[in-house]
Image 1: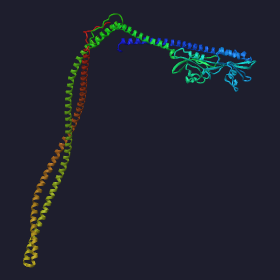
Image 2: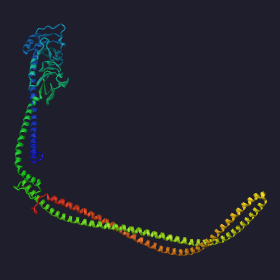
Image 3: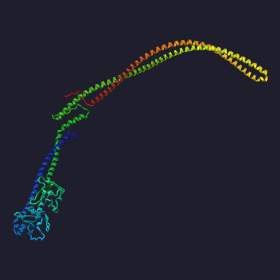
Image 4: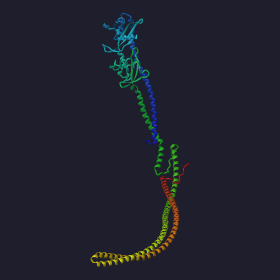
Length: 607
């Protein structure tokens, strides 16, 4: 409910009316309060002054009666005057005291005791000190128990004190006057002396009690001067707030204090405030009802516009609907502006729909072409990568061949050198073999000598055996030795024959080896020449392979650069394809968003 403009306007107007009424009531209340306070202060002052004047007149009248005893003070027999004063003034007793001898005459014939001296009495001393009529503090009468004061007046002749007259009088009348003062039921008055002693109070038990029993604010000096003269003083007495106003009683140091109950004094204000509050509530309720009805009538056409706009907003986006433009008020202007706005939006959305359809077709074609181009680029990149790998393998093979050629050239050069050295060694072998042949011939000669020595040794051993046989027993040991020598000679001869056979065979083999070594030397010379020619050819092959390797390396670099560029192109094509797909998706979303509105064929925007 708070969201409706009608309710907020109603609430705002009710708040304005309420604030206005509250302000008016507040101004009225404070104005009435000020006048009420002034009136209460005047009434309180009048009440206090009127009753204070009555009490003062009562006291003044008795004081004047007492002062009328002046002729009797100068006579020798004041009794008659004292008795007349007692009877006319309502005194309990009147008396005349003389300062010369301290004697006193009493109207009731009372004879004081011998130790009685009126000059020591309070009333006498106060009158002499004040040199005028005084009223003493109240006290309780010993006989009646009533509240009594003494009025005393000094009399002079030629500025010399001749007598002091006094009269005891009950102040029940004053107490009655103070007790009768009650401006409101909870208000009261009391009579108090300058030192704070209560002379009269509605509660008899408070008589002659200190005023501080009423409240702690009533200290000893509180009643030294009148209170509440300019504005009533506010104090709490008896648990209720009071307005205090006092007036001094002439001829005494007393004050009549009137305590007006504040709640009762402001009862009219509270009544005004209550009636103002009730009026405020009734007026606000009436205003709310009247304004509610008026706003309902005023907002009826606006609600129609709102319902139509809700139908447009909550339906299927039907932008062909228009609001009724009836009248010339703000509602009609809102409807007209809304219709123009919807027409413009419809025109824009139709343009967007047509553009989105074109964008969708173009995006689809771009995406399809991008996909085809991406596949062809990927195939080209794959073929290029395979070519690059093949070239890298050819490069590796050529480099390996070049290395092998260089290695073969180096090996051929080493083989040539080895063959050369082998030829030299073969020559040395031939020389050595010839030397071995010569040595074999010399060994053969030595073996022949050894063979002759063995034959001769065998003959000697045979002769020795014959001689030992001839010698018999003496030659037996020599025969044994001779036998051993013959065996040794036989073995030497056999060994010599074997050595000769070996030497002959070795000589034949040495001769064959020498021939073979000569042939090997010739072959080695031919091999050295062939190896040199192979080394030359391999060197040329190595140079050509190095040149091929450099050329293939440059081709490999070019292919690698081409492969990198192809990969970049493939990446760009992929990004283009993705962008085209996204563009197509956005176009689809745009078409879907626009498709959520119901549009005409072509909207015409009104001027």
